[in-house]
Length: 116
Length: 113
Image (cartoon, rainbow over all chains, first blue to last red; front, side, top):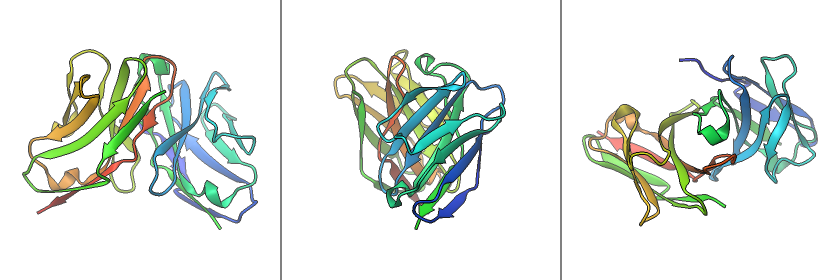
């Protein structure tokens, strides 16, 4: 079965540094998402992306966050100046059709971000 | 707004015993409900989903879930647990519109030999 690939699996950074989390969605998918899970808490929606623009974002996704699909295959999440509270597991997901069609989301295995 | 509550952060069962993982939802519109599983060091995988068709939904690996509107529940069951079922299970809800999934906190299932 095709899968969503995320790299790196674990990223350690210093507070205030910029990080870029990388995802390669399934090749024919059109909708892309980032979720995160802080240890012991719920999986939280961050942002959805379609047709090279953000279609929806949560309150968590403030000006420190940005997403990009630079080359038609990678889908990146950038955190401009990391904070301790950004430490979490970040999941990328993709789907073929629109959310309202309740298309199955395919999730990557996650990147564990540790901010020191 | 939608939300889900998963009762029990950790459930432990014996191999061969019934698995019951509880999920209650809150939704202002008819919900779409999902169960995802996360095995160690892997991503989230869809087990099954309810989208207003049959109330009893069968998923992969012998799991099923029943939508009960009167109880606002979508509990996940499996008649006989297998060691390979040990994982984290997440219930999720979305409205029947363009809204993202809202996840529960997850329940860790341990299976004892």
